[in-house]
Every structure is written in structure tokens, then in C-alpha cells.
Length: 332
Image 1 (cartoon, rainbow, N blue to C red):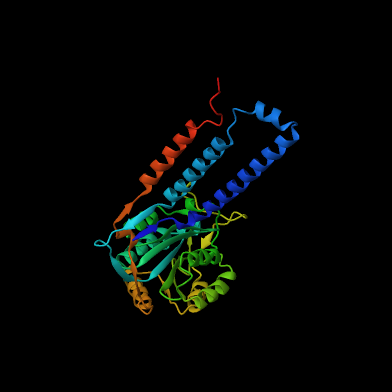
Image 2: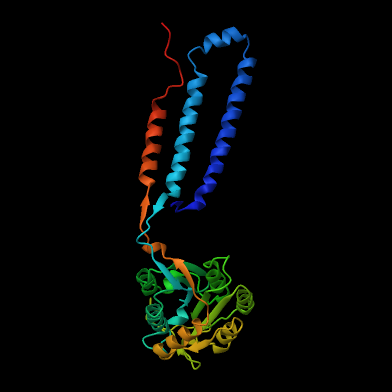
């Protein structure tokens, strides 16, 4: 069955429509200007070598090249039949806090590294589920869209750090909104967010956002990283302890109440990470309550792409257009 891989580029055909309108207006303007120049026979004699037909032909060829180029960009392809794989799973967005407070060492070697270890083990236990990765601090970024390629996901997780998000803070509200954007709007089930954070600088909007996601069928399970007693934070660039504006050493504490409230709004659970295996078991049991769906694993499908053929046709048309003159051969 033929299909386009990148249907979102269909809007480029609007550009073609605009070009056609501009071309028609240009022809009308030329005709109008020619009438204003004076005697029609004299004007015709002066422009005898100009060919309106060739001028229009050049535009038609360019338009055809543009259409074929758009089709090439959209990547028309044929889906293979024998190698398609159907998986049965849920969609999970993992929202990982990479703020500098995650460098606190109340969990060895630090909170962020323990969170990465947890995510890696969790993905090993979820082979049939699609995973997305959102990194957040003072702002949230989609690091990886939904995929069953857990190997690639682990590479993104391993490289995650405070440098990935320049703006510092812990904007859980932004992280939840970004996580919600990775899911399909047509499904009201099968969706879950695993929020991993120390909960510091908790913004009140996160609870309201969580309640809204619950109405969309999204379950949020939150993982608390750190300890209520807290710990100092070592700045990796200087090797010194982080201090506040008054010069006092900063103590970063786990905000369990905030994370638990967010999870409760969506019938999720809150777990304080101590032993990864226990936390993973609890998360798996809770996620198993979400009805699973069967979906085609596109990453494992075999496709025959026709991009090269369309690209070659576009190049050929552009080459042909280059050799089409606008002027007729002079009559001797």
C-alpha cells in the first residue's frame, strides 16, 4: 500500500497556488502595459522575438518540478507486507528533571545518575511500550518523541544533564504539558507519564495541569529523587558547593508532598526512589492497569521509498527549463 511518510508537508501545495496567482497577474500586467505603450503594430514589431508560449511553458515546467519536489519531500513509499510487526503496549512519556538540584548527593553518586539508572532499567521491563523523553528544568524540552527504539532512548537518557536545559529551576507544569503533547489526541486511553524529580521549586500550576491530563485519560506516576533531609549541591563547573545570594550553602530537599499530589490527581502513584527494583515493580504493576492497545511498529517495517525517483524527475525538469528560451529564434 502506498503512503506518504511526511504528510505534514502537504501545505507546500499552497505555495504553488500562490505562484499560479502571481503568474496570472503577471500575464495580465504585461498585457495591460503593452496596450499603454502605443500603436499595437509597432509594439508587436518591437517584441517580435518574445514568445508568450515559451514563457508560459517555462512556468509550467517549473510548476511541475515544484509539485514533484513536494512529493519527494513527503516521501512516497510502499509498505512491505511480510516484515510488519504488531506490538501491544502503552505510550509512556518519561519527564526527567535535569535541574542542578538533581546533582545533590543524598542518593549516590547523585540524584540525576540514579534517575538515569532507574529509567534504563524501567525501559528494559517495558519492551512493548513506546517511550518518549522530556527533559526539564526552568523550561521543558522534548528530547525524543514516542518510539519503540529503546536503544536510542537510552542514548538520550545517558547524555541528559543540566546543560541540556539552559534555564534553571524546576517547572513541573511545563514538563507535564510537554509530555501531554507527545500523545495522540484521538486516544483517551493507553497513556502514562512517569515524572522523575526532586520536586523543588514546585509551581502551583502543575496540580491544575495534572487534573486536566486526568480528564484526557493520562495517568501520572511520580518518582521522588532525594531525601526530605536534603543535601548540598556541588557545582560541576567549579567543584564548589552551591550557595544562595546571601552566601549560605544551599540544601536541596525532596518535596514529596508536591509530587504525591500530582500523582493523586490522575490516579497514579508516588514512589520515593530508594531501591530501583522495588520502584520499577511498583510502577509496572500500576501501569498494567492501563488497557493496552495493538499498534504497528513502524520502526520495524520494511518500506520501499520512491524519493530518489521523484528527486531525479524534479532535477530533470529543472534542467529542461533551463534550456527553454523565452525568445524565439531570430528570423533572418
